[in-house]
Length: 85
Image (cartoon, rainbow, N blue to C red; front, side):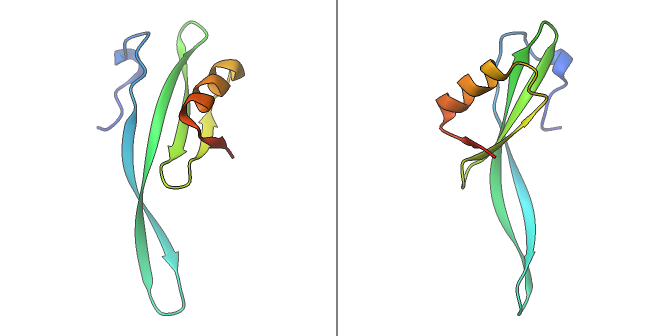
């Protein structure tokens, strides 16, 4: 299991996980796949929840899951230099 259960994370920890993804794409000659890495940054929000930032290492594009406290999300994004898309 790559990601620990949220209940197992210490309240103030900010672990980062790198997950290799296999992204298939098709060209005219053959079907191949390209491996890319993604960082997942859990951010403690409210009193008992987490939001998650997913960052593509190659493009530095980011997505956010459950951004209930946008200020915290934007602060972490500015520290990483990722662009929220």
